[in-house]
Length: 314
Image (cartoon, rainbow, N blue to C red; front, side):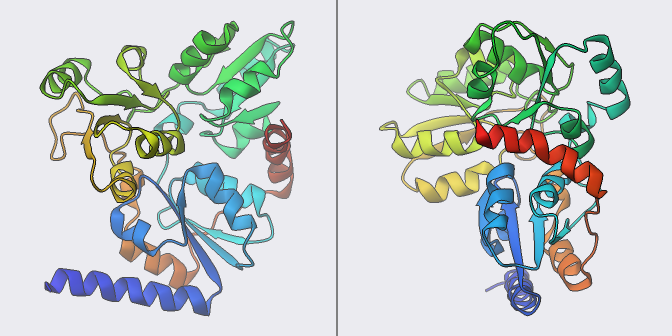
């Protein structure tokens, strides 16, 4: 066993001890590094994780993900202490929708129903009528009366996909995820030529030209389930490459290939630099020091909880 591996295991063991001592639960998004997913109590997508935390009796929630995810966990668990290993772990999509600018848009279209994708800040959630996830967005849109015009934010790619799926006209906020806009259609077609029997699976945050050639479009959980249930043995995966760790554990005998990014990089895939800001060492430090903590005003949490509750009721 290498020294590096010994150190990693030692750090994981120390985290496990701290977790028990402090009655903490560790949540890790699918896009986190494998060693963080290994130590987590729950691995999943953002809303699923926040909901799972509410079912535990933990005093402390450590969310190994990005800032808006930890905020959502705090909104759904207001009495718990919520920690984020690196407070700078933001999100290009959430940051593409500043609250002041979004309020100006709302003021221009006061009669529109505001639907926001959960990948947004607490402030944007608080301005919304209903929140959605990538897996339930179609149901949420279809629940809105046909005579009600809709603003959809912040992801324009998911918005376009929903317009096509539901036939509803929507005013789209011009936001996007840099990870899902990084895929190269030319490289993807070249890769597909090498693996013509492969199924291309994509997240709906991807650009339209990627979605047009995908065999399956769905959320992170949806993609995992599709690969598990499919009789195919080779898949080209167009989402953040971190999902491949969990996916490969689910289907060890299948071949999983990350969709190539436009830029040449070490992994030949698309990775979220914000997600990768969390490390095992930062996870240990934040649990030991109980910092950095997500702190939100009670009024903001209540306002942001309403559209999430409405989504769950739908």
